Amino acid sequence: MKMTSCKVKHEIEDQDQSPFTQFFPLSIPSLLAMALGLRSSTLNTNFFRPSIEGEIPRIHSLDNLSGSSGLLKYVSSKAFPSIRAKSSCNRSLLTHETPAMTHRIPIGEHKLHGLQSSRVKGVPVFVMLPLDTVNFEGALSRPRALNASLMALKAAGVAGVMVDAWWGLAEKDAPRQYNWRGYLELVRMVEKHGLKLQVVMSFHRCGGNVGDNCNIPLPPWVLEEVSKNPDLVYTDRSGRRNPEYISLGCDSLPVLRGRTPIQVYADYMRSFRDTFKNYLGEVIVEIQVGMGPCGELRYPSYPESNGTWRFPGIGEFQCYDKYMQASLQASAIAIGKEEWGRGGPHDSGQYNQFPEETGFFRRDGTWNSDYGNFFLQWYSNMLLNHGDRILQASGAIFAGTGAKLSGKVAGIHWHYQSRSHPAELTAGYYNTRNTDGYSPIARLFARRDTILNFTCMEMRDSEQPGHAGCGPEGLVRQVASAAQYAGIHLAGENALERYDDAALEKVAASCFLQENGQKLAAFTYLRMNKRLFESENWRRFVGFVRSLSEEGCYGKLSREDSGRSDLSVSWLGDRNLRTEAAALM
Image (cartoon, rainbow, N blue to C red; front, side):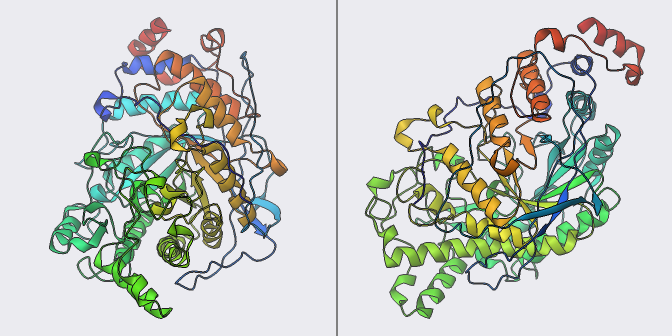
């Protein structure tokens, strides 16, 4: 029986975000002064590949998925100096079990690139860079501010940073014409500061979702093809087109000037690999493969652009382009139920409705019928197959580079307490009171040696509005359990910008799941901007980073500790900058 917990929404007060040029209201010397206000520390991140005993259960899907071993990522770090802080570490136990989780895979010895290495306590922290770190001209936005910020992050003990490698920027001029100039500049800057880099292969549009503060569309030549054939993008029941991501229904069709979408993605990743081959595995330690809107493996079922969806609406199925409809019809005919292939559920409601307002999602709705099972299985299998195709291609491209692969799964926690879990279903996760939707995803990631990155690590059930039926804590436990049983490691992110003690304490607790000593492979903090560098927020953040290097007990850095430093100032170089930084301290 599935264990649920109080489900809660992310209706935290909307945070103000500004474009990159407004992210750094503090002067360069001010940022350097912040860096100087910290004790010197280092954090070395090591990735391990486990030996997996036993066989990963197969995924029952439309495609025949081939098997491969799981992936486990562990962390090696040096202890940070102790801090005077009031700590609290109420950690959540990983206790969620579901009927489908029946195969436990023992974890064997772990090696760092073939060398034995001991396990240590810490969880490395990465920080997401601004979405427009690279501008439309292909150059770095405000490189001096970025350089100073990286200095501060390094001094705080951060392991590295994450950046989106936007398809709409790097291949915008013409097919197979790539511009990596700004990203090369970034990689060299990151290397100079002794940091690591996670790079997201971002094949989606930026703009129109939570936290999007800039607009980066798909490449113009792709949008030109979409204008000729609107069915290339996801479509809802009313015919509304969503140009956020290419529909998975045409994955294997040569619809992009003679290439299939999967071939286009593969060529893009291959160009990236060839350009950055000298940095992969050393500076670029992780490639996160985008597989849908917001880079997540899901359908765009809750688009916020133009007010289409608002929390906590159930969303809508995205299966009405001609390619998805053809697949649905063929699947229905194959089982002798041709009538089931004439479109999606007719009673599944609209974006902003609640489950009990629909015939499909209500407590005793048709989601739990033979037809409902057929449709939901087809819909989720299409998503799994899409993820498998992209991960198979990326695995072959980055094999032997030393960089690990990861994929992101959305933390859709609203209506988690309901029987049907409608918001998860419309997004493609067949997770209900009766079925486990995350174990198939975890097993897929295990087959493709991919780390599972999950969001909403900062959320508490008690923070969420009662009418939304939220349950982020139970959802995190369920996904963590699925990852553990599949033999892969879990990485995490916060879903919303949070700077408060409660959120950071919750993340610290979530990073150390306690069962069999398991912990997150890494945590990536959302996001580097002007608010992070505000005095109180920065003090909290430094305490948070240092707490994850040890036991996960969060404590804000005290004012006394943050005002002293044994960090050498010799790297400042310029006397004027050094004098101003000292004065600011």
